[in-house]
Length: 264
Image (cartoon, rainbow, N blue to C red; front, side, top):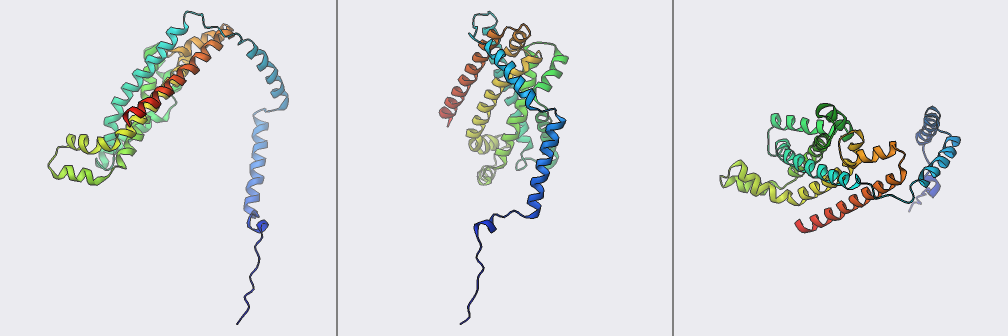
């Protein structure tokens, strides 16, 4: 009988970093210092910013909700978010079907996927700037910008959901001689409906938040009112608008949860 000597592995040996790990940590620290130096970050600027920020926030109180353009701005943001979600979803549904690789050949899926990728490439603010240049200031530019964002988001997730469905149900419906549209209606839609409702509800909530941002560049909504209040140094009204936006987004979140429960 032979004695097998085993070396004891301690906790320190197990978690001891290798030379490459230490080198990575050192490079990370060097890069953080370099980035902070090139961007002009300093404690002096932070201290001055805290003082200026305190004075700025002091002007927020008490919030002012009495201005006449508050409610119209909020209603316009709601309309922009609703219309953009509706139009974006209507465009995204056929695109997602065309881009699903388990339903369509490659020469059809790739052009549809390229359109979805292009819609997801740019931030809604960038698209809003282009839309403002194209159609002018107002809510129409905001609807166009958020519609493009909705097509990219809903189209991508819905296409992935379609590709993950069970093929057995599709094959069973095709075996009956059903047409392509009947296959989609009875084979695809029941399997993706719950996820589709979640995608649309989330995108509507996202558009509600983005509608307050695109207004800053002239695409309508409460964002334009907020930007004008900043330019007038009307900080108590800025506080009122900010609180109203928070309440609006929270209301959208509650509605989103309710819609998911109803259609689940």
